Image 1 (cartoon, rainbow, N blue to C red):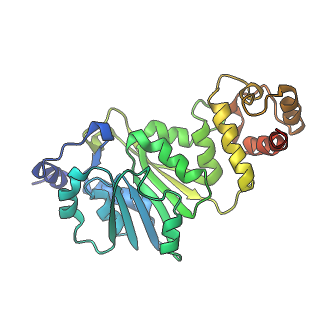
Image 2 (spheres, rainbow, N blue to C red; image 1 turned 90 degrees about the horizontal axis):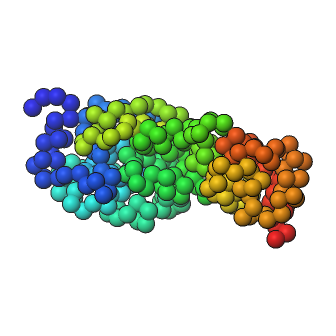
Image 3 (cartoon, rainbow, N blue to C red; image 1 turned 45 degrees about the vertical axis):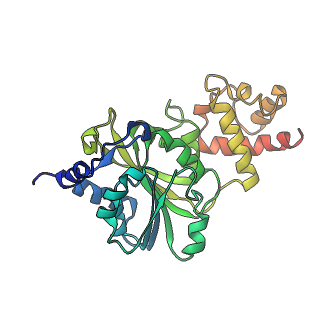
Length: 289
């Protein structure tokens, strides 16, 4: 048996596993690629404890376990359990969590911090496409102990995460990724890297979490409300997009101008620093409501 990935492909066939479209399953089976992706997710030099989302049959999990102190692997599809046991049953530093990634694990990382107080925590995985944004928001919006987030995502999602102000890619997801972390698009993965072959390309994205932030937790909660409001009305100006939070457009425009922000800008034109300034300018008005 020759050729990259044929060994893992044979395992899928022997266990009668067919990826389920409704779960967004696309398996990586090339051993060399899996090692490369794991190295990008968990670089050498730290004692990693990783929570892996969408672990599948454990092909990436094996490589993560080779680099981590401990791995907690989350998978929803119980039909994969036989192949998973064959693939990873011998690994001493692995705990499987069977369930929905939006329900079963603590995506804030606080549970892992209690269990592993001295380790560097990483949230990683080949994310199922249909839950990618929700996973990211749950990991990014609250303050968490994660040191690093690293995912395989659709290329379009990666471009949105790293989107620059003034571009159509910059949105709520870009804002929170760049407010919380230093983001890098590490490696592009063509469709042929996966089984089944997806219709679009993917990429490995890493986020090195920042240690401090310019807003208080109260201000961050307000930033979340502001970002939801204005990016749900992208075609409107900032002043108009904020009407659902602070109805007095005249006071909103005045506060923005005093903070050096043009009320006629569209939300994608503002950037992270601009949203920080906007939050500080408008929170006093919101408190009066």
